[in-house]
Length: 88
Image 1: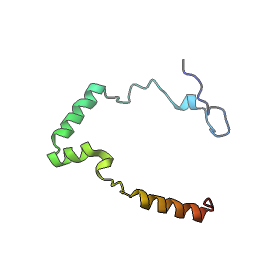
Image 2: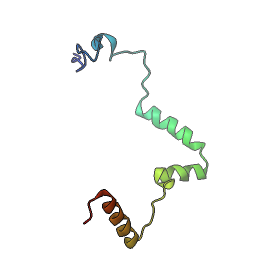
Image 3: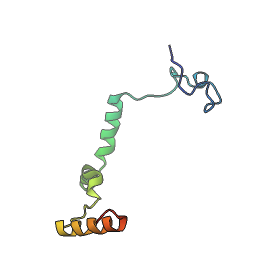
């Protein structure tokens, strides 16, 4: 049995969601995990070594973390606190 959706019969939802969503539809293709893995392997087989390395780095490979000395960090923090009125 399908439980009622929380928005059903509320002002935010002007229609009955139970009538508009058929969770048991058989005409929607849902690939199996094995099919997904197979297609991923096919796609990845076309990657160059550079592309494979770039993707292995993820977002971290494209971001740079600024290096700030403790002295500079203290100065920036003090300046920010003074401008915010938090420093004495």
